[in-house]
Every structure is written in C-alpha cells, then in structure tokens.
Amino acid sequence: KNEVEQSPQNLTAQEGEFITINCSYSVGISALHWLQQHPGGGIVSLFMLSSGKKKHGRLIATINIQEKHSSLHITASHPRDSAVYICAVKDSGGSNYKLTFGKGTLLTVNP
Amino acid sequence: SAVISQKPSRDICQRGTSLTIQCQVDSQVTMMFWYRQQPGQSLTLIATANQGSEATYESGFVIDKFPISRPNLTFSTLTVSNMSPEDSSIYLCSAVLASSYEQYFGPGTRLTVT
Image 1 (cartoon, each protein chain N blue to C red):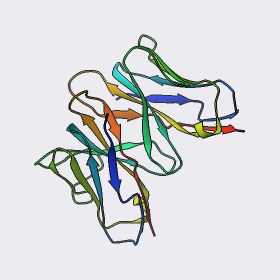
Image 2: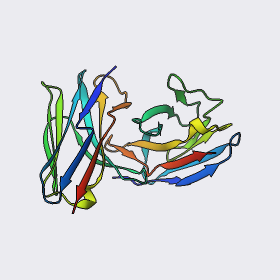
Image 3: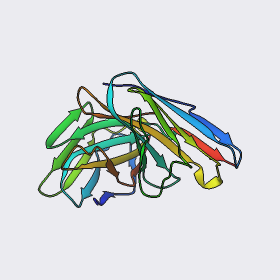
C-alpha cells in the first residue's frame, strides 16, 4: 500500500509570495493528482501528472518519478488561493483507479 | 472534461435516520467511486459503484451501512444508514471519464449527524 506524505501540513504566506507544497510517496505510481479543496468541502482537480511538468496559469506541478516526489508551486500567491491542497496517487499496474490520498496542506494567503 | 453534481450539498440529520446522496455526471464514465472525509482526515475510499451490479466495498465498509446504487453509466447514489455522530463527514463522488480516463470529483456533501 502506498504511503503519501505531504509537507508542510500548514503554510501561511503573504500575498505575492511564491509557494511550494511537496508530496512524496513510497511505491511506484502511474499517475499523481493535485487537488484543491475549499472550506465548503468541494474538490477541484488541478493537475494529473505521470511525468515532467505541467503549468496552468499561476500553478505549476512537477514530478520526479525516480525520487517518488512531486511539488506544486503557486506563483504570485493571492488570498483566493487559500485552500487545502491534496496530493493523491494511483498505483501502477492493472486498471485500478483507486487513489491514495495525502492528508493535505492547509494554505493561508494573507493580503 | 466532466462536471459532477451532488445532492444535497449539505444536511443536518438526526441519529438513527438515513440519508441518500445523489451523484450525477454530465459525461460517459467508466468508473464511479464514493469517498468519505472525516474531520481532519484524508479522503478514504468507501466503494466502487458498479453499473447494474453490487458495489465493491473497501475494508471497513459494508453494504448494510452504505448501500450504493448505479442504475446507469452517469448516475449513482450512496445511502448512509442508521446514522450516528461518527458518520459526520464530507462524502465525495468521483468518476473516471470513458474518453480520457481522467478522474473528476464532485463538490461533496457535508453531513452533520446530531
């Protein structure tokens, strides 16, 4: 069973700062998701990665398969980025779409 | 892409009652899942909803407590039965698109049991 660790657990930043959230996992995967959860509970999928790097607006996600590590970066952070960011992995092999989730990183961006 | 809707978005229920949560996807999907997120915890898979057959439950979850239906490719329901305060959680529906195999999540249902 994959173990997913996120760091930091909590992060407070000032508006405009560059943010990095890290995710490491223990067993080989076929895909990694970065998710955003707002206080109401709803989850939005930000990225699905299997290799390399993806960018969407101010968000950048990278993954290093050999090191079993991924990072989510937010450039020019804004208070509306305040949310819980969750890393989730899909184990490699077969057609199993079950995900293992990290506990999340609570990001607070102050104006 | 896909849009997943859930009803209700939140509810406050009495101990001992049951609540049925609906999940509707606007695209053809291959797999649908139900997750639970207890306060301060990470998401946990309850079951995989199988079209036209019984759901596949994860360890620790049973059909009598969490009956699931999936009558067609784009709709599923989860019932939380005989609720207790420990069932207070966010319940999330998720689906894998048939066209791209990308996984999408619903907005969640926040359940409080008093």
